[in-house]
Structure formats: structure tokens, C-alpha cells
Image (cartoon, rainbow, N blue to C red; front, side, top):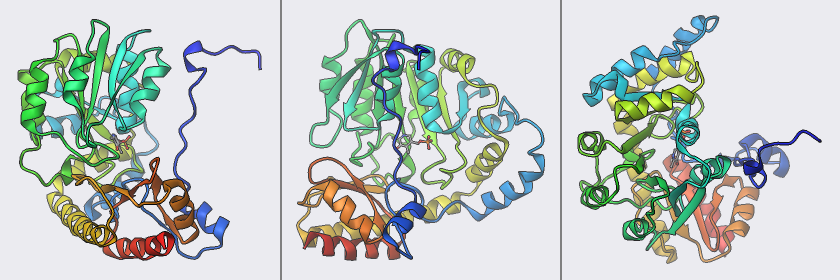
Length: 359
Ligand SMILES: *Cc1c(COP(=O)(O)O)cnc(C)c1O
């Protein structure tokens, strides 16, 4: 093919999603397969959201509201901010991409952890920025390490709190002390995809209130995890109006579809569903902890809906063997795997098969 593409994308690889359940069933001739690999909500979404989506199907002949007016109003009211301080997106994935397009110049330095969410590095490379990788320390963000890497080329710092895949978190005090030391021309992005699952009080539960003191902070949240809407693609970002306006310039005109907007508005209203999801997750987490303890497996305590666990055997092998037995998890390098917390039945099945594989 003789059409040349941008040099920056030469070494990029397309995202490889986990294998769909149907493919695994066919490949191994299995009747039942469960997926505990993508941190989805095992309850799906709220029944009220489902109903709202069905009712909105009649509106699909016309374009979505490109401004997400109602959704922005709902979010502004909940967070006590103005509508020009929030921007919905087609998942956080899209927002990470849009922020990169708006802000990353060639050779800008973008600081992130290892291991963390892979989209940060991909979008950095895509724009010709330089990823500056700071390894986790005891499975948690090394904030001092990050501070020591700031230069006059630093543009963005990605903080995933709690972190995917390790499930660990930084406290409000650590975060505020950190923000105090960040130059005002550096964007700090707090990706809070799992915030609804956090059990600890010392987590920064309300980062939105920090915005008045730290206008270089962006807060990113999603409906894909605790709200159970991964398939519909909707998230939102809150920040200073000037930053929001800049990002708004490069987004697609109708980036959040009609069903996603309706679903998100309804999801925000159903607090009971969130509580149910939180409780189920906590029950599953405690069960998995106790089973891992019996097996002598190390795991950092998780504030999310997934556990990063050392199973004492190569993660890739365990992944393949588990798949043959109808359970999809994520290998994580070395002897670590990441397992999403499912329903109690799924969790028990996972443990049963894991014991077989480990033996
Ligand atoms: C799952 C996840 C997201 C969410 O992505 P969506 O595009 O909103 O589905 C964002 N950040 C992290 C760290 C995640 O794990």
C-alpha cells in the first residue's frame, strides 16, 4: 500500500479486546462460559435505565442532541457546577483520545504509571508525545516518583484512582499534597472509573470540589462500570470551563448517541441500583479474598470491582487453562492475573476452576 500514514502511528498496535464469550464457546465446544475479564457489572444496568432505553428507540431516526443539554444539566445539578464545566463523551476511552488531540504536541511529555490503563500511552504515542513511565511502588502510584519526572516539557499527568489493574488507591491527603506541587501549566487527570466501588473513607470521594483550588485538574468518570452501561458508551469529564471549551472544539459533533444520553440521565437517578452493585461487589470481594488467603495467594487490597492476584503460576498459562474450562480472565504478566468480581455463582465457579488449574 503506497499511501503513507503519519509517522507517529508506525509502531502503534490496534487494541486487542478480550475474546467474546461466543468465540470461546465455539473454540472449546463449551455450553457455558463466563467472562470475568473486563470489569463489567454482573448485574447489567438498572431496570429503570433499560426501560428508558426501550422508550427512546423511537427517536433513532433523528440525530442526537449534539450538546447533550439535558445530561449536562443533570450532571451540573448533581455536582453543583455550571453546564460549561462538564463534557459528556462516548465512554472515557473517547475522552482520553479527545484530550490527547487537543493538548499533546510532538515531544510533549505525558507522565503515567506502569501498570495502569493502556489507553493513556496509546494516545500519547499517537500524537507524537513522549510517554514518561513511572513504575508503581508496592502496586500503588508512586507520587514522589511522578513529581521527580516533571520537566518544562510535561503536559499531562494521568492518575488512575483507584488504579486499573491493581485496584489500589491514593488518599485524598496524598492527592491534595501532590496537586499542591504541580505547576499550573500541567494538566492532572483523575480517571475515576471505579470510584463507586471504593470502600475507604480516606479516598478523595469529591474531587470536583478540588477544582476551585486546582484549575489544572480534570475529573473523568464513566457509566461503564458500576452503572453497568459499558455497551452503550457514555462517560463525562468535569473541569475548568476553558479546558472544557478547548476539548469541546475537537470532539465529534454527535459523539454521544441518543440512547446513551437517555440511559445516563436515568442511571444518575437510580441510587438503589448503585448500592446493590456496591454490595454485591463487596460480598464477592470478601469471598474471593478468603479463598485466595486459603490458597496462599498474594493480592493488593482492591478498591475496585477487580482483583490483581498472584496465582503462583504463569498468568498466560492460567488464562488459557481457565478459558478451556469456560472462565475468561486477564493474564497480567508474570504470575499475576486480574479477575473481575462477578455474581456469587460466577465467583464460586471461578474459584472451582482455578483450583483445578493450579493443581
Ligand atoms: C474501564 C475503564 C475506563 C472506561 O472506559 P469507557 O470508555 O468509559 O468504557 C476508563 N478508565 C479506566 C481506568 C478503566 O478501567
